[in-house]
Length: 225
Image (cartoon, rainbow, N blue to C red; front, side, top):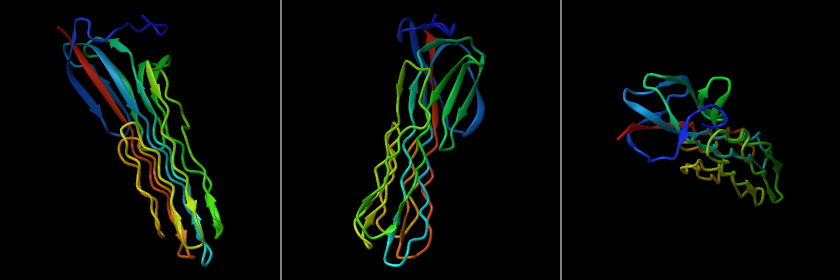
């Protein structure tokens, strides 16, 4: 039994993986232990951060915004459970943490959120680099936790050449592609990919950063052999 009063054990001792439940519906919800299931192991991925917007540039100049970081990762210990027990869950729609409440108010698993993109490279022509973003909410509660992948920085070469910031990949990848012309940032890939930065070129108008990818929860279900 761990310090939170949850029975735990090393995987594989008298138990077989019989099924898994993949939770992709965003927002708050519940998970109910299936009939016959005696233990579970939970994986969580937080939502990726959103890319920042780019304000309208001046003529013959470029504005490049920063990208969002990837979502964090968390794996629980093996938890002994009772069939029919219900747990509260929350899957991030992007730019937020995913959660699994093991003991309400006492022990919650968190897949941390990627940080949103921050300030843009201001309109101009000189070579400049944008900021890099990392985790905003740390993963916690698991035996294995991992911070998000940081975003790439934007790079303006001149008043006519630039590359947008690439969002940080989630635990399973999902880093969006860069853009090199006027346009909105690329959305972060599933699951937990950070949204890409945007570009405004030659006073062509303001643009929008890419949305961060949603989170994910996977519950592995063990049945006694």
